[in-house]
Length: 114
Length: 109
Image (cartoon, rainbow over all chains, first blue to last red; front, side):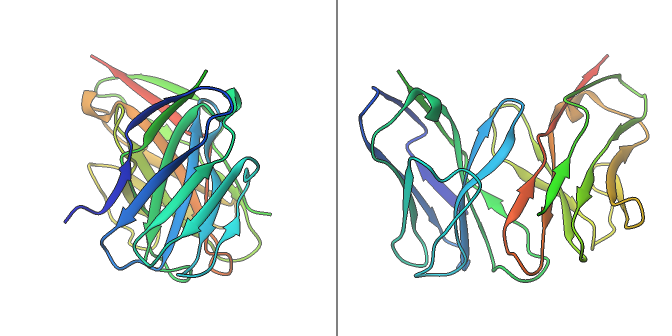
């Protein structure tokens, strides 16, 4: 059982380049999340998908777009990367928006924008 | 708005000493609270949640609604407890997880 899988694990981009971070879960979860992790800032929510077909902005959505491709997959796109987007990105999923359901995390993508 | 505060960025303790990680939250209703742990360069994993009232790896946490706190405690720290710990809140009517800034725990022998 793989859980939540993210690709790639590492990426270096030049300023202005675009890329898509992929995330897939095999737990039949309804809700999926994208967070960024920065020192001293904890985890900040970028985008959230409560269920297939819906997406919602989180705390720091600027510079990002998402696609909930199907129930399993939730991708994060950087259209024009900036050095401020250097971070570790985590995808997560949970059974649903309601109830005491924990979030399961992927292994993270370490992104550097130069 | 929901907010989770972890006042300590770093806690350094000796092996065998007690450790307490503070977590305070702001939410007007009845939230669901969690503690997550992240070992060096690994994914976050659930340590415990308030509703289950269990002890995991010797850690416990009690929800104090009056003080809006959910502090994490362990009576005798071990070296393998060295990690980053995050307190998280999930509001039933919101669906998202709000995380604190995290506390780095370093246990020295």
